Length: 322
Image (tube, rainbow, N blue to C red):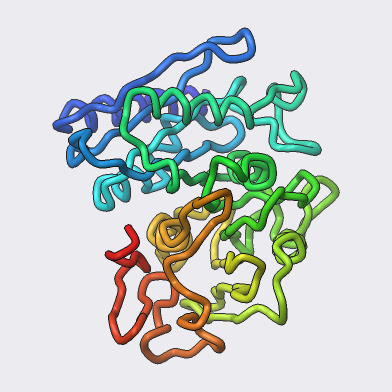
């Protein structure tokens, strides 16, 4: 009953938002694996079709939906501000097959949700001008775990990935080094920070990704508000990065204690990477990255501000590159 009420309220808000928008979101249906699958597509009004733009796929959590993820994750506003197209795919039975033990109908039916993600991207590319170098994956909980699976199994398509409250549930064997950032709440009891019989600990996932990407040395740690922190490996093969941001919060981490805007930090990470000739290249050369975490400029807001060759770069996007 509660779920139905939430879904009804979400639908009302969605209708109000799209009715007030100059360009309403579309619900797209496509056939995949003998099933009719859907996704919600948001194209910002800034898109004119004459310039290629980035694409972000944002995956909902278990028992949630594409509609709900679009409403509470904050990525719709980020899409408008940064002028990229975003899609919220819908899982069968409100679930995704993210790997061992997770989750629901998608897992039980052995659905190929990695291929479904590919189909969503291809469908959008057929009707919109997408920068194929800048396609990214993000997601929450079960969707965060699927994001990690995509980072392993779809390295030819996605330039970088950002998971929220989801762990790596498949072997960490990407075909190439893959940039990834994860966000996890200390007080998460659904997907515990310290792990359980189903989910590995957040720190274990960080270690697996650092090993998969052949990162050297110890991670740099940046203190955030309260006890929050971001740990980042910056010396990895092909100059990719691996990060874990541990925040004061529970499972629905978009509503964390310190009001840290996850889409802002995730986009600042993702948008620095482009897929060029099968390799994720970064707009921030290794020589310009920090070697220690400090509380003074230019690293005081590490993921949001970079100083390169004397220039302060907001959002870590180099005008000459993107």
